[in-house]
Length: 359
Image (cartoon, rainbow, N blue to C red):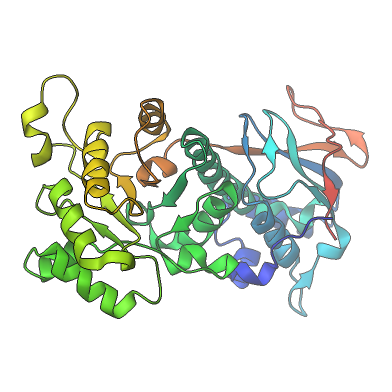
């Protein structure tokens, strides 16, 4: 049996989840009504989505059921997990449209209030996993750096980082994103630090290496002066073996100076394959063939495929907001009540032999 994340990893706000604070009100009303009427129907709840995708968020969903199913009483919260039978797939499993990813069987009043939150976990994490897996496939095995933290609320970082990690991203940019597997965030010498050294990329990089060179692989942004080819060589000359890589991040509205005399036969703005070729050639000519090239700025699966089809000398892709776009919604349906079929019109039970009982 494969391992699942311990529920403690998620640091769930247990009281608020149990109280239905994050749940659609009608689920809370349903739970209260069933409890007040003493009605405890034994149901089979079936959870699925409608795309070919990569399953994410299932351990978090299970943790919510484990820690927050139950009933309130005069003596306080009475846990309900032991009265449920939960079967589920695993984090990172490939899933088909309409495939059942989880079944919850038991007294519906124990978990009716949790549908909003466990479906939300699945939807968000699966979206990130699917997007990361897509760009990973497009990159043909090259490293993917997960850089969308600045494009969304900070509260989503932990689970998103885990989803990206499971789907194949080699690095994340914040410690929060890496926390569920005990990693650390990685990054580059940023534009802000270069500005703090009066626009001197070499000086900023040297200071960065002095302070952090023993803690990480140092990568330096080289587009501050919009002369990436020259700056990359200057940084490599100055840092030598202490430089892991350079990162190209030219604005999509600018043309790097090294390309000004070549415009006319390709789209010259932003980070493009020809700019990568120029930087790679300059580094190699200066004896820095071991320095890696990271590219970023508007990359998604389609753009990565273009770079790969042209044989661009990229070692790693930094991908940001595109990894958070799209949707991967989940649905939960009661399909049996007291062992008899009882699904809404158009739905029926889809047994899945791949599901495993959750202990």
